Each structure stands twice: as C-alpha cells, then as structure tokens.
Amino acid sequence: MIQVHPLVIFFASIFTSNMIFSNFLGMCSFTSVSKEIETAAGLGIAVTFVLAITTVLNYIVYHYILVYFGLEYLRFIIFILVIAAFVQFLEMVLEKYLENLYYSLGIFLPLITVNCAIMGVSLFMVTRNYNLVQTAFFGLGSGIGWALAIVSMAGIRSRINEDNLPLGLGGPAITLITTGIMAMAFIGFSGIVSIS
Amino acid sequence: MQTILLTVVVVSVISAILALILTFADKYIADYGEVNLVINGEEPLIVEGGDSLLTTLRQQKIFIPSACGGKATCGYCKVKVLSGAGPILATELPFLSKEEQAENTRLSCQVKLKQDMTIEIPEELFNVREYDVTVESIVDVTDKIKRVRFKLPEGETIKFKPGQYVQIMAPAYEGNDEEVYRAYSIASSALDHNHIELFIGFAGGIGTTYVHKYLKVGDIVKLNGPYGDFYYQDGEGEVLLVGAGTGMAPLLSILYHLRDNKVERKVRMLFGARTPDDLFALEEMKMFEEELHDFKFMPTLSRVTEEMNWQGDTGRVNNSIEKYVEKGENLTAYLCGSPVMIESIKESLAEKDIPEDHIHYDAF
Image (cartoon, rainbow over all chains, first blue to last red; front, side):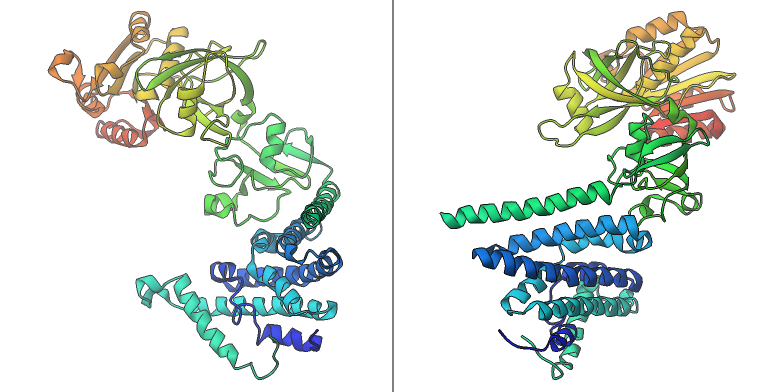
C-alpha cells in the first residue's frame, strides 16, 4: 500500500489530479451545466457531497464484502448500484427535511447518478489501494476539485461572447477548448503535491 | 461454478438490501401524512400527501387535461396554486409565461403535495368525470374516418355542451408501450346522456392507429370529459357552421342541439372536402334540412372531375364564404378544422367585417 498522507491526497485531488483537468471525467454535466455560475455552483456542491459519501460507502462495500468473497471484478456493477441508491435516498431526505436545499440542488441529483467522476473516484480508490482515511480525503478532495473546475468554467463561459466565434466552435466546442487551456494552466500546480 | 453462484448471491443480496433501504425510506421519510386540499375556496378535501397534484386530483375524480401523463412535456395540466407549493421548478419554466408565473400558475404534474394546499381550477373541470365506456358500433363513414359510438356504463350519465370534446385512452398495444389520452369532439346530441359518438380520422398517430387497427365492438375504453370552451352559445342572427373532415363532429352536435331545442335561427353549414367520397353524414344533413327551421348543408369540393357529376360548389371553403356571406351580416360562426384552415377562414370572415367575438373555433 502506498503510504501517502491523507492531506496530500486531499490537495492533490483538488489541484494536480483534478477529476476534470487531469482525468477528464464527468465531462457531460461539466459541459452542459456550466453556463451560469449559480447553477454550476449548485451542481458542484451536490457532486462534492455525493462523492464524499459514496466513495466511503463504496470503500466499505468493496473491502468488507467484495474482497471477502473474492469478487473484486463485480465492483463496477456494485459501485453503480450503491451510487444510484444513495442518490435516490438523498433526494428523499432533502425533499423532506431540507426543502430549500432540495429546490436548489434537487434537480441536479438525478444527473449525478450518471456522473462518471463519481464512478471514477471509487475505481481509483481501488486501483490506488487507499485505506479508509485516505479514501475519505480523496473523495472529498475530488468533489471540491470538480466543483472548482465547473464553477471557474461557468465564470469563463459567462464572459465568452460566442457571437465572435466561427459557427462550428460555439457551445460545447469552445468549452472543451477552454477546458484544455485550463488543464494546461493547472499543470502549474504539479510541483506542489503528487499522487498517481 | 462456485464463483458464478456466489456472484449471483452477492449481487442479489446487495441489491435487495439497497432496495429494502429505499422502500423503508419511501415509506417513512417520503411519508407526508394526510393534508388538506382546498379547491376554489370550498370545503377542504383530506388527501394522502406525497404524490403530484395531478395524480392526487385524478384520485379525487377531478380530471385536469394532460396529454403527456405527468412528464412536463405537454404543458396542459396548468392550475393556479395559491399556497402550499414550493418555488417554480426548472422543469416548469418553459411552459409558463411571465403573467402565469406572476399569478402562481403551475404545472400540476410537477407540484408535489407535501403540505396543506390551496388551488384554483376552472369551474367546468368539476364536471369532468372518467367513464369505462363500451364500444357499441364502429362505422366506416369514409375510407379514412370511422364513426364510433360508445355506451356509458349502466346508471352513469354525461352532461356536456354541444361542441365540447372528450379524451379517450389508447392503451399500450403492439408498437406502442405507453397509455396515452387523445382528444376527440363529441358528435352526438347533448340530450343523449348515455352515449357518446366520435368521428376518428386515421392520421397514423398512437390514438388513431389504436382506434383504426385495434378497437372492436364490445371493447371497454376509458373516456373522460367533457372539456373545452368551444360550444354553441344562444344568440340572435344567422349561425354559420364551417368544418372539414372530422371537424364535422362538434358541428353535428350543435345541429342536434338546435333541432332538439327548436331554435329558430337561420343556419348554414359549409363543409370542405376533396371528392364526393369524402362527404359523410349526408342522411343526417338531409334530416336536419327537413326538421330545422331554416338549414342548408353546402359542401364544397376541391378536387372534382367531370365524371363525378358534382352539382354543388367547388374550390376551397373560403370561396363559399366569399359567395354566400354578406358584408357586415349579423352572423355567429363556429369553425372546426385544422389550424391552417381555421386561420384562413378567420381571414375570410374578417374581410366580411364579422367581428372577432362572433367567431368561435376549435383547431385540431
């Protein structure tokens, strides 16, 4: 097991191993919901919350059930099941007890079930052999990193005047180009911390 | 072998546990108990919370028109929610104008009933009921249009105004996996409270395919209604009925109403079709010409050839309006047909100085 300090993992997953800028995961909602800062922030918070919790849940399920029975190859199916069930559960809880939060985040929850970043973090947690504490920091950090990416993208997009762009480069195209440039900018952080 | 069994067991057990958690959550967390629903300021109804407003109202036998079945894609199920609903959801926004948002109009399929709620719905929707009707007869009146007669269940009656429409449910059938409601105007007399007749043209859609390919005499069909603000209104002066194709239906119901109530108004009916074979209900038209105070059925055909030996008018219905309607006449028009046709007829009538509030229409 690689012994990396959990805090290192936390900061690395925000800056140097950002889910979007270095792994390009969770791109579909990243490109479609990054038009306004407010909605982007909503989705970012929801993703962070779900990521932080499902990664830990998946860690427990993986290590205490799948590894125990020697069924590691089932992780793809099981992780998706856990994520989907948790999101559903969260939606019910929010709707009942935190109504304001539900109205601002609720509509994003169904989007999260199919967000690849969430699945990706759970799978990385396995391939990188993290322990529970590392996993918890990794999940939380990745979520914050994803939220940071989508909010900054929304900020940039709200300032891009698409009228000046060639026709085929509007919308998702310019978003992907911008993502690429931002990813290069994030390389500037690479000296600080590193995990792989 | 052991791995396969183990895999099946582990996946099943994990899925079962997750399903169980969700079921309990649904039962205890998503349980909103009983809530009071006040409609139009009347006595509150005590209903089970947790469902959408549309579903709850349907359970209370109040039918809000809805074509998409609660998916927020048709935008028909609008009601005014005065209190008890949260903010307008992103899913509703495309269907609500600024004015509607300001007066708290919502899509009832998107509003969840979680607490006491006060709503306002149009009075006439109270009249709307759902019936399990039996198909009594199906007649091909032209090669594309069927006249279907439904019988209401014993002891149940329907009250409608001549010109209104009902919805029938096309169930899932081969090639269609969802139940859909489709609207058709009533062709029968409003005095006959036990039967409903509809003209259903074949258009290749879910509803018409169901009626033309699957519906048989003796079948039971879900029907609800009546709906619509297109109906005959008492008044003075001439009545001009204009229709084409299945647009015959509401006009026929209006004619029955005029006959049954011995209304002594001059009535003219212009009907557009392509060839003589496309005309139908001719015997009824003859009967009305004899029994009504002053009625003439004046079809106009657009594709006649010499062999058809057609004596009547030719061309589009607009030509007949040009020919028969006098400028500034005291006339009330009832139009039923395709939106394109209605628009052009409205223009023709406007040229004859018929005021807009004398023109009633139902475009389908």
